[in-house]
Image (cartoon, rainbow, N blue to C red; front, side, top):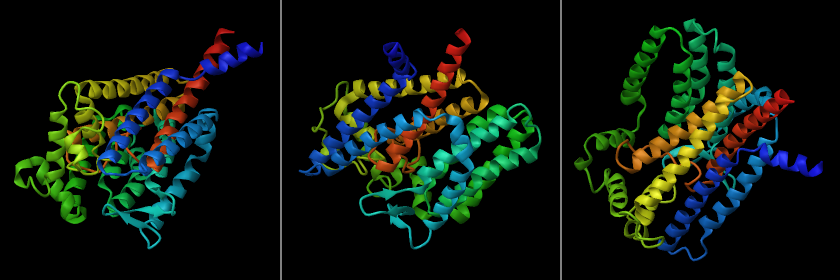
Length: 375
């Protein structure tokens, strides 16, 4: 009896999702180790930190997956307001500026981005709101309410300025929202608002370097040795990998420090150069498994809240993967977005594992519900 219960507890987890997430994290560790070789980091400090954060992330995933996701719905709004408070405080002298954005709290042993916390609770709040409106949304006032929930943190993130995180928050809200809107004119009004917001941002909000990134994206040859340098080196690295790559630790672009932010924003270029087309296929394949399983969890969720929560997790991870890989291949402007599971960063990695844990909680609830139906 005890053995059967133990086996059932094991089966309640979506092991395909867990294993795919782990393999992506291992790819990230391999790339971070390789970059450390080229930078002469004999102690491999970043690699060791990432191993620790991976272990912490797995522990957090286990805890979150074993908590009924409806408990998070009750805490969602409290976490949302806490996230807003932290986003305000990080703009004060309490915050630290890293890579041009005042979006970090330096805690000595750890640099923490409050926007990562906001991602978690914003998803929970949006899932709760979509749950309420999924079958009734027809008034524009309801749409404005949903928009305000996102606009408050979005504005605070843009002020930092952290345009990459702002894009993630915006598209995580937009994509699921388009599926529940019943009035087509509301969609037209959303896109009209997007265009207006982009124009206002261009003339009054974007910093010069953010404008330059868009200009360089439209014309990469305009400044190949300065503002277009990052993308140019990334494209060279991706193209030079060939079929099997140059081998870990032997990529000329990564080992000779030509690729900027090689452990975070452009880690995909490191993997493409050193592991080649086969490595890229493996990375994309594991991400496909993650997306497929998250979609399956959403489809089999026992209620609307679980369905939207899983879809929002899928949307957020997909947007980050799409933008990061597109950025590394020169297909999208550089926005400073890391690659989920793979890029270096403690708070970023733990956030991703918390989101996966939430989806696993929905999966476990669905498995229990289906077992009860069978019995």
